[in-house]
Length: 258
Ligand SMILES: Nc1ncnc2c1ncn2[C@@H]1O[C@H](COP(=O)(O)OP(=O)(O)OP(=O)(O)O)[C@@H](O)[C@H]1O
Ligand SMILES: [Mg+2]
Image (tube, rainbow, N blue to C red):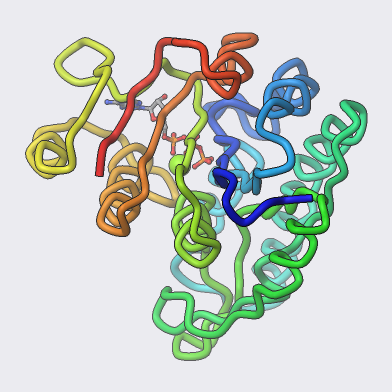
């Protein structure tokens, strides 16, 4: 099945691609249905993680769940977020299975413990074993328990992409989203060297969400590059673009070079 010498990719399915971020609980069903066909050329050497878009951020922000969780109402609130995010996970799994790709979900709150928002303890062997057995692991953004803060805290899909890539020794991390790549001074950048990234980050204008939006993402990109792993931003709302990229064709995207 998965050969140790073959190229491994971690693909993050962006919340911006599978939902309409500004409208709570609005999914882009057409994009979710295409996930399987889009990632198929990368099978079996792919691990998927996904963000929550408007199934997570607005619900979290409304009750301030990323800051404080006290009382029954908020406990119901975090359970409700988990419920809705699982709907996205289910949609992605359905799409993969319909495309003939074996896939299992792994929930970070079940295999990760945080300390001050950093992944401290984890049990990744099941993911490795299933991956090598030919089953694509699908790992949603989640709220693992933080043993220092004594509450669940967010582990974003971007963080999980970094974590998985680093632990599994991936060759590339692909962040999919609803734009063509990293937009800087009005244009989509084709190529960004690691040495240029910090400067771009300091100048970029951004709007925050529960995990820092594009700025938060670039911080994870920087850490992935530091680990020597290349990064690509690709628009998943554009039909066939990721599929073509995985087949080795040239497409519009932003490539970050370590
Ligand atoms: N300079 C920029 N370049 C690229 N995208 C930008 C820029 N500024 C803002 N964005 C927006 O940021 C989005 C990516 O970050 P965001 O966190 O909103 O999406 P995501 O990570 O796909 O969603 P989620 O966090 O729910 O998984 C892009 O889809 C785009 O709409
Ligand atoms: Mg994000």
